[in-house]
Image 1: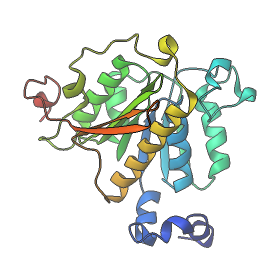
Image 2: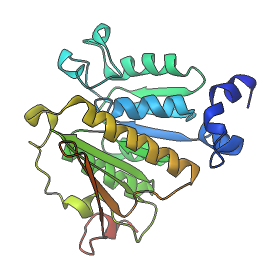
Image 3: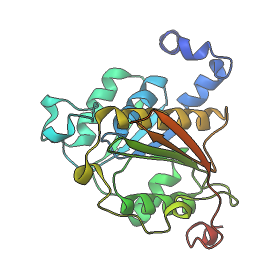
Length: 249
């Protein structure tokens, strides 16, 4: 690592769980982020600032004025611009030392699986069940760990799915293809910091996976109630009848 990197990441390198070796591991890592809205904003900003060497950003939407209340990666000057372009511009200002690639499209089928296959960790920051189920299946096919979260109104949840381990539950074990597509911010609203809290936790879980440190949320579902400021963690067992993860190994 050069002097600029050592200085930039010095507060992380000070941590015994990270050190220079861990920071180098982050520099050599690649993370795929799907969705650059409320969750994807803090995720991408913290991963970029932390020195994850390669970020691949995926979104097919454009910045709208209604996004600005919570999607802090974008600002008023980006209205009408592709979210991938806006995100790249802002993230390069945060950290010009990393490599950022963008895909201004809705990834599906083999293209999605190929993108997932090249990532060390996938972060699902999307806002609909169809995308979440597709990403889950792609992660199972590629055997890539998945960090997933959601936030609505003043409630949120987060979990880690070790799609690289045959005995671990997957996202479909949790919802079994029965998610309600009306359960999103567009239909129900969300208080701005909620996505910031859950997205920041996604970034934390991603860094822990990349560094192989601490206890992850794999096999657990963590729920947050913003009204009462209470966290609740539940065990998430593997569903023996899940048609996604039981057919992938």
